[in-house]
Amino acid sequence: MPVESPDILLVFITAPSKEVAEQLARQLLQERLAACVNIVSNLHSLYWWEGELQSDSETLLMVKTRKEGFEDHFLPFVQQHHPYQVPEILALPVVAGSNTYLQWVLQETQPKST
Image (cartoon, rainbow, N blue to C red):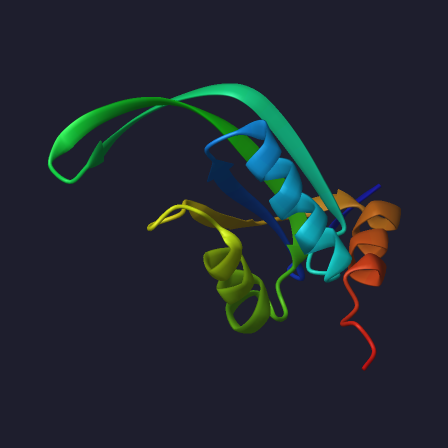
Protein backbone atom coordinates (compact mmCIF):
# COMPACT_ATOMS: atom_id res chain seq x y z
CA MET A 1 0.00 0.00 0.00
CA PRO A 2 1.39 3.44 -0.91
CA VAL A 3 2.36 5.71 1.95
CA GLU A 4 3.01 9.44 2.12
CA SER A 5 6.64 10.47 2.06
CA PRO A 6 7.56 14.05 2.85
CA ASP A 7 11.18 12.93 3.35
CA ILE A 8 12.05 11.80 -0.21
CA LEU A 9 12.86 13.88 -3.29
CA LEU A 10 13.04 13.02 -6.98
CA VAL A 11 15.68 15.28 -8.51
CA PHE A 12 16.03 15.93 -12.24
CA ILE A 13 19.47 16.94 -13.52
CA THR A 14 20.48 17.30 -17.17
CA ALA A 15 24.02 16.63 -18.38
CA PRO A 16 25.77 17.18 -21.72
CA SER A 17 26.48 13.47 -22.30
CA LYS A 18 25.89 9.96 -21.01
CA GLU A 19 29.50 9.83 -19.80
CA VAL A 20 29.16 13.00 -17.73
CA ALA A 21 25.81 11.80 -16.37
CA GLU A 22 27.27 8.44 -15.34
CA GLN A 23 30.27 10.08 -13.66
CA LEU A 24 28.01 12.43 -11.70
CA ALA A 25 25.67 9.56 -10.78
CA ARG A 26 28.57 7.49 -9.44
CA GLN A 27 29.85 10.45 -7.40
CA LEU A 28 26.40 11.04 -5.88
CA LEU A 29 26.08 7.35 -5.01
CA GLN A 30 29.59 7.12 -3.54
CA GLU A 31 28.88 10.14 -1.33
CA ARG A 32 25.55 8.58 -0.23
CA LEU A 33 23.73 11.61 -1.61
CA ALA A 34 21.59 9.30 -3.77
CA ALA A 35 20.07 5.86 -3.32
CA CYS A 36 19.41 5.34 -7.02
CA VAL A 37 20.04 7.27 -10.22
CA ASN A 38 18.27 6.49 -13.49
CA ILE A 39 20.04 7.77 -16.61
CA VAL A 40 17.93 8.55 -19.67
CA SER A 41 19.90 9.15 -22.87
CA ASN A 42 18.89 10.82 -26.12
CA LEU A 43 17.04 13.72 -24.56
CA HIS A 44 16.53 16.69 -26.87
CA SER A 45 16.44 20.07 -25.12
CA LEU A 46 15.41 23.46 -26.43
CA TYR A 47 16.20 26.43 -24.19
CA TRP A 48 17.28 30.05 -24.05
CA TRP A 49 20.93 30.76 -23.29
CA GLU A 50 22.53 34.21 -23.43
CA GLY A 51 19.71 35.60 -25.55
CA GLU A 52 19.73 32.83 -28.16
CA LEU A 53 17.55 29.79 -28.64
CA GLN A 54 19.63 26.62 -28.21
CA SER A 55 18.96 23.05 -29.33
CA ASP A 56 21.10 20.29 -27.80
CA SER A 57 21.24 16.60 -27.07
CA GLU A 58 21.40 15.95 -23.34
CA THR A 59 21.14 13.12 -20.85
CA LEU A 60 18.72 13.17 -17.91
CA LEU A 61 19.50 11.94 -14.41
CA MET A 62 16.55 11.01 -12.19
CA VAL A 63 17.93 10.92 -8.65
CA LYS A 64 16.17 9.49 -5.60
CA THR A 65 17.39 11.14 -2.41
CA ARG A 66 16.31 12.41 0.98
CA LYS A 67 15.00 15.92 1.57
CA GLU A 68 17.19 16.36 4.65
CA GLY A 69 20.54 17.70 3.50
CA PHE A 70 19.38 18.66 0.01
CA GLU A 71 20.18 22.36 0.31
CA ASP A 72 23.29 21.97 2.47
CA HIS A 73 24.96 18.97 0.82
CA PHE A 74 23.29 17.66 -2.35
CA LEU A 75 22.81 20.96 -4.19
CA PRO A 76 26.32 22.36 -3.55
CA PHE A 77 27.86 18.98 -4.47
CA VAL A 78 26.10 18.88 -7.85
CA GLN A 79 26.89 22.54 -8.57
CA GLN A 80 30.58 21.92 -7.80
CA HIS A 81 30.87 18.75 -9.94
CA HIS A 82 28.62 19.70 -12.88
CA PRO A 83 30.22 21.09 -16.05
CA TYR A 84 27.39 23.55 -16.83
CA GLN A 85 27.61 27.13 -15.63
CA VAL A 86 23.89 26.95 -14.73
CA PRO A 87 23.00 23.26 -14.28
CA GLU A 88 19.36 22.20 -14.27
CA ILE A 89 18.68 20.82 -10.79
CA LEU A 90 14.97 20.47 -10.06
CA ALA A 91 13.73 18.67 -6.94
CA LEU A 92 10.19 17.38 -6.67
CA PRO A 93 8.70 15.94 -3.48
CA VAL A 94 7.65 12.31 -3.60
CA VAL A 95 4.08 12.41 -2.31
CA ALA A 96 3.55 8.65 -2.06
CA GLY A 97 5.22 5.35 -2.80
CA SER A 98 5.96 1.85 -1.65
CA ASN A 99 6.90 1.93 2.03
CA THR A 100 9.72 -0.58 1.52
CA TYR A 101 11.20 1.47 -1.33
CA LEU A 102 10.93 4.75 0.55
CA GLN A 103 12.59 3.22 3.62
CA TRP A 104 15.33 1.83 1.38
CA VAL A 105 16.01 5.32 -0.05
CA LEU A 106 16.33 6.73 3.46
CA GLN A 107 18.58 3.86 4.56
CA GLU A 108 20.91 4.16 1.57
CA THR A 109 21.28 7.93 1.87
CA GLN A 110 22.45 7.97 5.47
CA PRO A 111 25.29 10.46 5.89
CA LYS A 112 28.73 8.86 5.57
CA SER A 113 30.47 8.09 8.85
CA THR A 114 33.59 10.10 9.52
